[in-house]
Length: 491
Image (cartoon, rainbow, N blue to C red):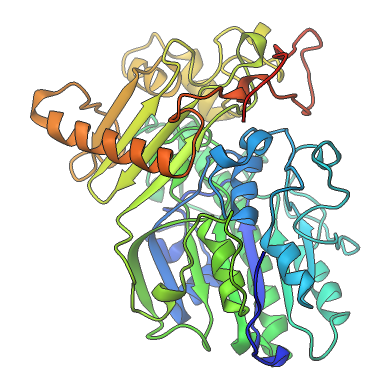
């Protein structure tokens, strides 16, 4: 499956992979946010590379993390394309391959999740053995008691002196729920919040965003502490430090959607021994699945053929081998809040100037059915996490100034969407069907389809697409909810 180089073990880099849970690109200090404080991320960006166009493979936890681990888009991963599913053992992960050649591996917090690994033939989390012995008193309700950085210290202390390591530091923050008013109580000024154009500019929204910032800062403090541990031990210079998030913010029209607020993520990478001309802002397009091949190549291994994502080693060397001009993103079933547990299948291509989205089932509600009857979570529009912002938009949908935000978040969407990002960075005005952009729509439709065919997406190949019918292993608050199981499926 891979071949090793003849480098000495001590020359192989360590890997510290830090991943938050639900953080959009804009919400980091180095990326320009005026309120949130992220000195850990900012240091990694300043001393390494800051990626301007980094995108998750899917704006939903389990599928995104599966893509990161396997170096493959979600449409190649069978059940792992759904949240609350499994990651079949036949798909190789970079962690397993590194462990095979002597790396110490481990994780704390949220690794691969959520779902049931045993159903896919795995007995342990593919992020590695769990380290969770250390706890702390969280500053606010909604945060876990896990001392992520302390757990990294425990892992690091048991690694052999000459053994390289690969550690996954995954916080549960800033996943909901948040403590209401936490941001204001830390002294943050709601007037300074940059409200995304997909939300009404309202005090409730500003406060909700401040509460979200508090949890991002908690994640960042864990990153900074882990970096300090490595620095004190003299191991920082030979460690690839990655700081990112699995997908965008837990707000309407963000998480669980293919728009930028759901898919564009912060990404900074520091590796003094492997990155030339550090301090760069990288404009090349990156999917987070590219990290798997990157880690393997950095360790002197050849990624297995099943890993279709492209290593970033040429970007590290500041000598790109080919144009990285687009990212590809996908969704299948999130929480299945439609009758029969159906998802909202869609694919997207994101370039510098345009976002093109293909919705395969435009007759379905993209955020889940308005009626909670068909939702495993037993909430209306259940693909969207409950929040003060969601409630505000739903309860005021008939008031002047709110209807457009309600429609953006919850209304049905056409089969094709096209957005011109220079004039419409929030992706509010769909240009699909506009004669002025017909050629661009056709071009991007073709580029997306060709990529999906090349990477063997069953939907693009006209094959059976079984994601609606895979088992759902999540918590079912609606006891009458179930998935329509299909007798047989092609893969």
